Image (cartoon, rainbow, N blue to C red):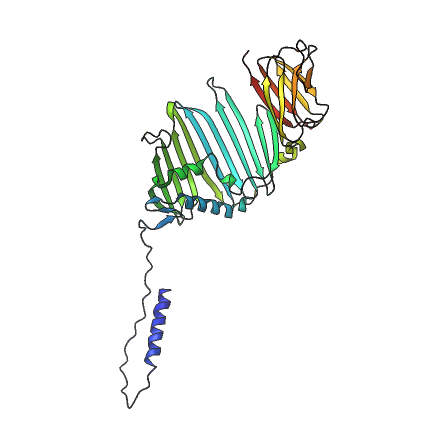
Length: 371
């Protein structure tokens, strides 16, 4: 471009020299050498405090968290992405909880899959593992929950926006709260792309002037937050660490998981059930909202180590059903409380499960009371 400009200027000067006609005799001018213009060297300016290193980021640090978050979302939604996030909680130096989440979405974020595994260790060293999966398309979202060998499903109209799978566990909020506390730690080039590392120390929990949160963001020049690490220290030796990594950009929409074929039709029912009262004679099961519990559904009560089961002879759509065990050992579900002396005594801890005729779980709870 600089060479073209130089040649253009020479061309204009020649034209200007030919625009006047000579009057009278003229001498032949001496021939002079015309030098070819040397192209100007393009120099990349050194970033200054006002130079934008990435959307919302200058040499001053993170000056506009909203601009950075918006750019990150837009880039991921444009290309499709795979990201991993790990959240680890430690107590007195020992890990007590670990959550690992992988999220995959195609361009536009309309079709996505999120797979999360949570493990928790109690005071006795016993580990509990729970798995949650979410499948999204343009109209529907389906969840699968696996815990203690039991699998439940739920099908609902999609309510999540396209960017829903990009953020998990409040990381977006943590970045916004850090705001201008993020300063530039380093600027480097990786595979021809400028990458900025930002760090922040924040008093976020205690409000006592002592920094309890340390955060590091690795951001490229397009605004993609390639990696984010946030360490939060609470009282009593509890630490909460989030590690967020973009594994891949430029991916197609994921294929539907195979387990979609096993989702029972009842998973699409939106039924609100709850236990309001529970004494030594009966359990008050209340229908709070939504679809009716279908006729033929089963109700199970576990009390004193014994499992009792009954089948609903009609749909249950409003009001309540009192669950009680007769003196003959049969479980009843009635609109009224049982008469005194007609029941077996219920334990102080019981489990109630309601299943649709197709086997899908509609409700489950374990409750206790003082004896």
